[in-house]
Amino acid sequence: MTGLPQNRFRARLKTGEQQIGLWSTIPEATAVEALAGAGFDWLVIDTEHAALEAAPVLPLLQAVAPYPTAPVVRPVVNDTALIKRHLDMGAQTLLLPMINSRAEAEAAVAATRYAPAGVRGMAGTTRAARYGRVTDYARRAQDEICLLLQVETLVAIRHLEEIATTPGVDGIFIGPADLAASLGYPGQSRHPEVQEVVLDTIDRLKSWDVPSGILATDAAFARACIAAGTTFTAVGVDMSLLVRAADHLAASFRPG
Image (cartoon, rainbow, N blue to C red; front, side, top):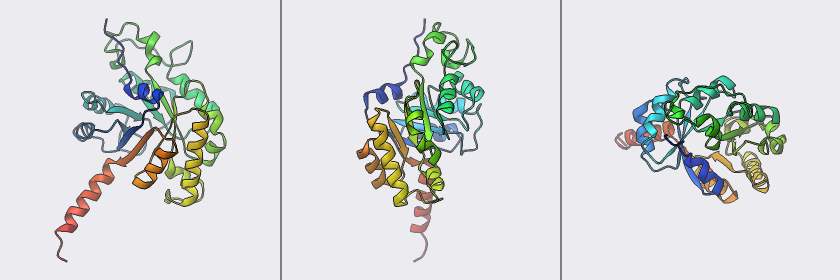
């Protein structure tokens, strides 16, 4: 019998160890494989804002697999059928966007669990079960599944405690860009009022012993979030890194 793969990200999340991550928006296996070898603790495979449907996520998960970097898949929406597909192809950590209520959090939890605890559809020969070699997969799968929920609106912040304390939720990710828009500052995630709400949210989550995370591409604010209590902190986006490096190189050879 083949053993159930351990979710390294979830194990470290439970211990409170700081995990530094990177966002992957370039939907190509070679790029993802190159990023996986960079030394980050976790790597988000983003399907919400990238040109990536469910099926092409599989080769990206396979590209990350040889490396210690833990893949985190962000589905485009909190949808039971879509969650099932990502889990079946071997994703063990999911980051679900735009969660605004306890009911939505409970639906997300149910989608990650087989009956009677949830509503995930049964299948026996998936990559998640090592193609049927993990014979007790259906009984033990939820032990290694990690569910992260995004709060990124004023509505979500108002319902933060009921979302964060939903049984089966492993952590809360604060989405600063959409939160900024919700606060009336679209495109201004570094606005002082936005950052104040973010830091207050981290503090509230810490008081309930709920792990918190964020994407902060400004190094100073990323460190401020870590100091405030985030334990899964993404500090860059692949496309931004590529564009900045290309622009810098081109500019360095321009006359003047």
